[in-house]
Structures are given as C-alpha cells and as structure tokens.
Length: 135
Image 1 (cartoon, one colour):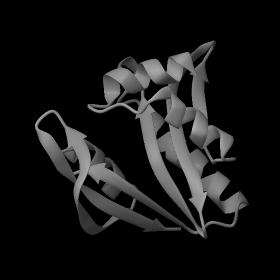
Image 2 (cartoon, rainbow, N blue to C red):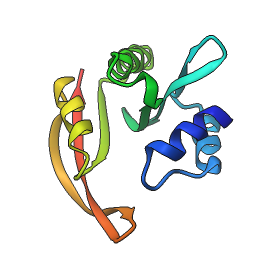
Image 3 (cartoon, rainbow, N blue to C red):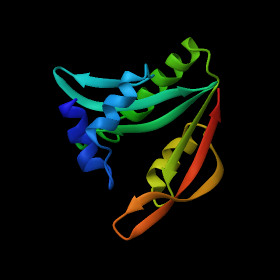
Image 4 (cartoon, rainbow, N blue to C red):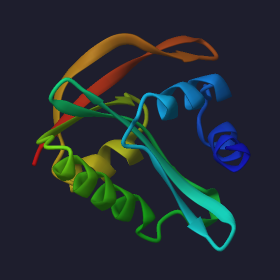
C-alpha cells in the first residue's frame, strides 16, 4: 500500500488519503496493482456499483508512462468486469485533464455529461467530465 500511495501523491493534484484506498479494497472491489519484480508500477481502483463498474482511479508510475500499461490495466479491468457480469463502466475525469480524456476516448469511452465543482483545486473547484463505456 505504501508504494501505491507514493504513486498517488505525485500523480494526483488532490491525492486520496490512505484511508480511502483501504476502504475501497475492503469493499471487495475490482481493484488491482501491476508490479515489476517487487515494485508497484501502476494501480487500478474500481468498484461494482449496482450493475456497472465505477472506475475511480487508474495511475501508472511516472517512469513507466506511455508504454501501454494504462491500456494493459484497462484490459485487465474489462476481463474482471466480464467475470462479474458487468457490461458498462463509468468514470469521472478532471475537465483540465485532456491527456486522460484522450486516453479514455481512445478506449471507446464517450462523454456523458459534466459535473460542476466535483474536484478540489488549489484555487477552488473544477468540473468533472463523466465518461461511460458499454462493453
């Protein structure tokens, strides 16, 4: 968990607390980590919410970005969703995070709507783009 949290701290402008990570894992989630030898190099936090998957956080360590690990983790998540009979996935992404939005669009996610003031920022709040994919 320490390695996961270290990645979260430098990747997220408003990082989750360790307590949130533990709470998600304890809820029998679809979450997992990617390791290289003994080192965590990426993680995916996702839960079942009724009949769909809610992708809450997916992050790759800085030095391993742009090598296909994000897509690899999404493939794993989709396989886990199918095992759980889930056919759709929903997520929120910062409106300013164009890199993440492009990543999700490349994976056939569609924009559904915008949620006002969803994320905290240093200067107040930022809207979230809600995206969805049906398998």
